[in-house]
Image 1 (cartoon, rainbow, N blue to C red):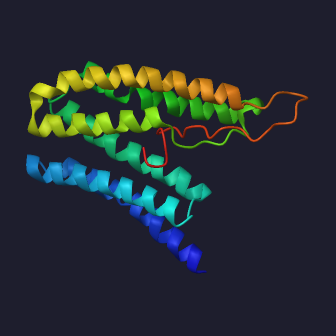
Image 2 (image 1 turned 45 degrees about the vertical axis):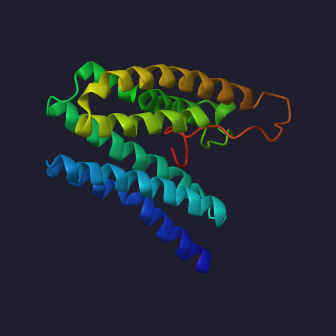
Amino acid sequence: MRRRTSLTLLNALSLSRLPLAALFVVMEDPLARVGLVLAAAFTDFLDGYIARHKHLESYWGALIDPIADRGFVMVALLTFMLEGKLTPLEFGILVVRDVATGLGFVVSRLIPQFRLVKFQARMLGKVVTTLQLGALLSVLLAPVLVRPLVIAVGLTALASVVDYTAAVWRARARPGVPRPRGPNIPTPSGGGAA
């Protein structure tokens, strides 16, 4: 029962990013938004740290964490685009990895060869997420850095999608061949903590 309570609290910590995203939309003060971005990043780090060090990884946690991550980032980026602080092209570049890995995840669930692939965080996914958060902060604090960060996200996102695709391809089940324990493959978000 104690493990179940711990997992529930950990998942609630992950889900806290969704109300933070709603607050991001309604709060227009740049410093308040900086605080929300930092709070979202902190909860992302904290839930991943606790899950790893307390051995509280779970199926639902692995699903909830990336959804909460992507939810916060997507809402914040969409808010900036609608406010004219990001162009539609910049928005598209900043979310291309998320869209590609989301589609990849859905396809992997539909194709039998890929259904057994275990999805987990990958380093390039974490880098993309960190750069995305940097881009969010730069819109608020240093707009001159937005374009270089968008370019960095775009290039890293392409590398990340290639990395994810190669990892999934290597870990797929082959007909007639017993499936060895394969590598950990990325979640649609790029990771439990990404």
